[in-house]
Figure 1 (cartoon, rainbow, N blue to C red):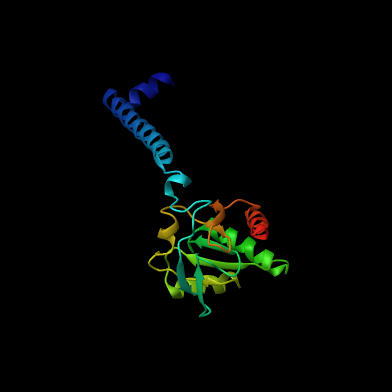
Figure 2 (cartoon, rainbow, N blue to C red):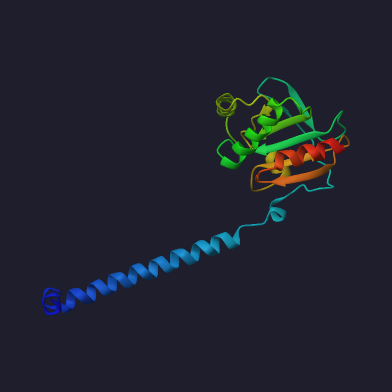
Length: 188
């Protein structure tokens, strides 16, 4: 059996198979090692944050999907939860869904404004309808609001006190973040 296998595989064919296998293995090693390098080179939350805890929140005004003009930053009548999100981000959807569940329970009475990072008015309106979100949402197709606060990563949530000072920040989303945000809101 061994001799018949050797006679079928020519020396040239066997060498070619070994070369192809070596090339594929080398390509795999390069791919795996470069993936690790890409992950290691991503900037940290701190490196991508323009605004952090203790900073004055940049002032801006947006018109919500419901047509209400809302301002954030500076002196405000009540603390505000600002959520910066992307309608294409799964973590953002999880955060906003958890937020909506809290609102549906009827125990939450806080000023909330969610502002999209990109996406047209029509896209964000459809996203809101599809997900049955009832809190104020504003589209920011040019990402002007987002780039006042950060350069990368969503969702980002900011608890802003009545004086316009950022008191608490979350990055991306983890279970329990909404409860933490509301706990912080209650302090101010």
